[in-house]
Image 1 (cartoon, rainbow, N blue to C red):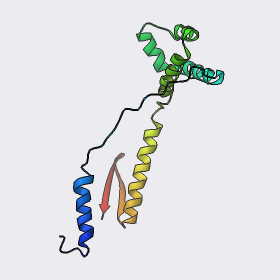
Image 2 (image 1 turned 135 degrees about the vertical axis):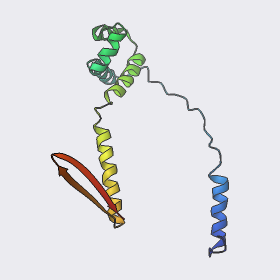
Image 3 (image 1 turned 60 degrees about the vertical axis):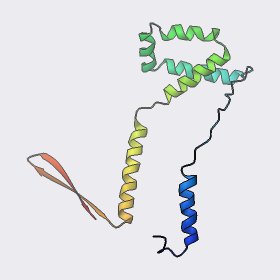
Length: 147
């Protein structure tokens, strides 16, 4: 294969790279965590409390609290006695719960993938034909790929 290539130096460099650099181990180190500042601003603290209260209103969190024998009112009553660091940690966890969504992101991702596949097939000059044939109100789809 190398004899067919015009530039043997390039082939040697690529081979060297594939042998030594692709299989080389990755080096990593622990990064120290940065805690929240003890002098948290009032606005940040209020935002964190609002996030926690919105999370307590969700049905999923209320069901989990009920499983542990708590109510959202009991948890809300404990908020004033918590430190700012504890409130910030709870708000971060609550923010992750609120970002869960309802699956719309998955639907959008699937549609984007389908559109990308169709665009790639069109660029490669392949045709996709979808035929709908119905016999006695039963719809069957047949898809033919002409490549």
